[in-house]
Length: 355
Ligand SMILES: [Zn+2]
Ligand SMILES: [Zn+2]
Image 1 (cartoon, rainbow, N blue to C red):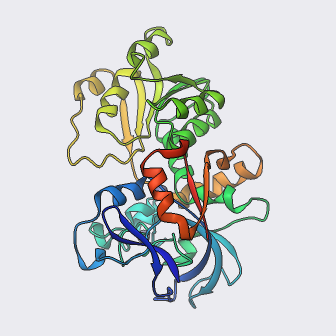
Image 2 (tube, rainbow, N blue to C red; image 1 turned 120 degrees about the vertical axis):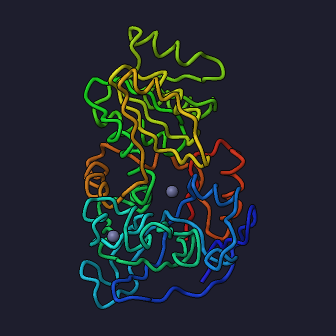
Image 3 (cartoon, rainbow, N blue to C red; image 1 turned 60 degrees about the horizontal axis):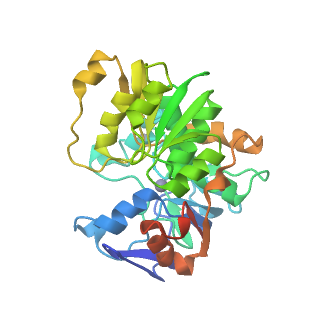
């Protein structure tokens, strides 16, 4: 089959790889119709992976995909051939102590107690879905049926970034009437803004240095701040009676923005970090969090928890995830999609691959 294959830093290639096969009776094979390129795929694109047998060149990348079930193992109960499904980007067994508490991302079985990765597309153990097909382990726990009432494009981001944005609003305990600051107007930041409004935020202040992305946020109803032109802390304090925001969501993944979050959040407020902060160590103004009684929460997404709640919101027209799509490319042009996304070219926000 065709797939976008990892060959190293800045070296992804569309090429042929073996068709996925059932490896366990709980697996399913999904024939993919749509996939998307994610900001976390760019960590792989820009940084590569440490060498190991699992990360040798040639595995399919990508963790945001949906399609149609082609084959199921004998123990799969909830799905059969022909079902239209999306896959959670993080894979859990559905039965261990972590999964049963809703932390599928920390699945004891899939992470082998903590060492192994359980996200599609970062090695040969769990090849990705920017491909014509993928094997999904523990299909009953990690696949979700897509109802006929929503399109592939409406469902695609349920695999990762829409639940991630929702989790931001949830971890920040966004409540009716809140003023919420969201760092980042990329795909995840945009969904965090939308979900903050769904949870009742009265005002959402969107922060980004990219003017085109800010303009999109303004059109969707956010107040906007370009922190390279406006003093953000003064702006937020000036518009909240000197108090600060009730909740702040960091959707970029930079340690210094956690410090900024403490500065713009009111005493007793909440900060959620959903951006992937890849820095090995982050310096924090801990005394600020302490003196202001600010709670700080973070975590890797568990779409398994949020998808059942988000599908009805899409069906009801309360959420339109397709608003972030700026580029649609065939899988064969996927590497070009990476170049556009990595280079912030063509006013890109989200690239969808049609398989
Ligand atoms: Zn993703
Ligand atoms: Zn588990």
